[in-house]
Length: 347
Ligand code: KG4
Ligand code: ZN
Image (cartoon, rainbow, N blue to C red):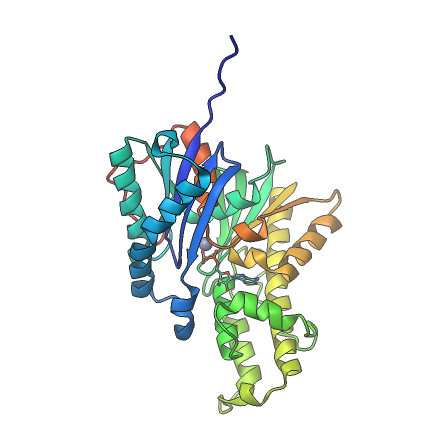
């Protein structure tokens, strides 16, 4: 008699920032459902995420999102083998909502709990369709809160090579969008405005932090955009109101090109250092077309070409598929958390 192949189905939960998300994924790659309740509308008028508002919205949204994820997947709780939760890094009062829910489900359903690092999960999105990646691999996570480069040995084995010393790449997009009076979240707004702009119109600075550094700094670039818009004396607070659409588009395109340039050059530096055959790219900013193209060019130019694996656009920004998918590898490795699990904002 043929043995029944056993499949592992995991319910993933994500509440680290301003998206309440749940997903059901089988064997790490078969996406059965993915539900994301975005809070963008709630935070828009503040130009950024307000932690207290995010936390309250997670409490309101989580149960309907979980119910919908189970419903869309067509599974009952008996078919769930484990509960996975992103417990770090993120906003503490946002993380705690998901962690509490995951621990409760784990206890009530008698299923193991898997704790997931949100940044590592972003990279898992880039590996979603891959059986195996060719090593060595360098991995870049670019999100609203983090810009981190890793030496990636496997989905579970990541060594940090460098990170931002000030603003994250996504944060820079959001802050520059505020300067240009473009709607929140800034990344998609800047990308849209940049479509009609000239990326070479303004030569904004590219901070490389010295020849050997694998760290990032974006605050100087943000200040350069501010000075460009308001003048060095900062007297032109309403200058942006007097700018033409073309001027705004040129600033957006030039800023975007500067960010992409730095991200690609640092990734190449890291890839050269570890002799990378593969480059992984994930996180909200990885949805940016200019960055994806520039990274692809860098990879193709190398001899022999490096393989670029980028998260599908739908799984670049926060979601729970990446959480449930990474949890499969931890499940297989027997790496479980217990009910003392706490959120950890710094990760
Ligand atoms: O990964 P993510 O959803 O949340 C965090 O973990 O932070 O990333 C959100 C960030 C925001 O800063 C947003 O402006 C940026 O990703 N982002 C983009 C694009 N889409 C989202 N940045 C540049 N271009 C985009 N198309
Ligand atoms: Zn994220």
